Length: 173
Image (tube, rainbow, N blue to C red; front, side):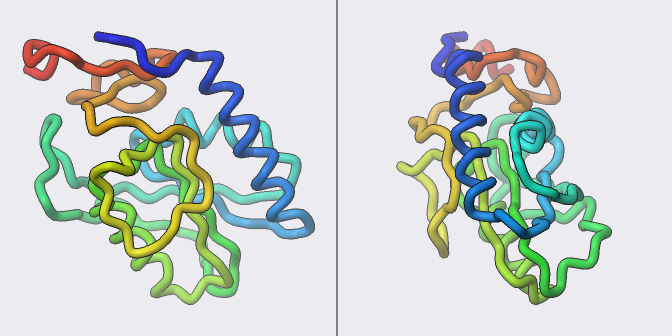
């Protein structure tokens, strides 16, 4: 493995994103929707840095088998909070092809929220095909397979404090 983003750089970027969200949602109470499982660390760190009232809920989708996208998105857990007329911030660990986030934004918009924003720690701009602009992006990264800070490979390596590229096919076995 090769580290590409340090723990300190992540901490700094999370604070910067939180400062911007705090300004953007001053005097509002948005609901942050974390996308399980990968976003839980980013979401936890982000909400602790925010200077606004907020609510948190979660969705879970599945679109990967190992390190490869299946090409389809399966909703495994929907949100339980009423979001009609609410400001919603979807929190993702990574946006890769765009398949999952396009699905999620469409799904959230079906409930007629007041607004929908997307915050992601990592963005693979080179390969993403999005139907909208992202609101909060931590780091743009190349299309390598990454782990750490909540991102996994077969449910392992989420606990790494930095972001790493798996640089050998042996690592993906």
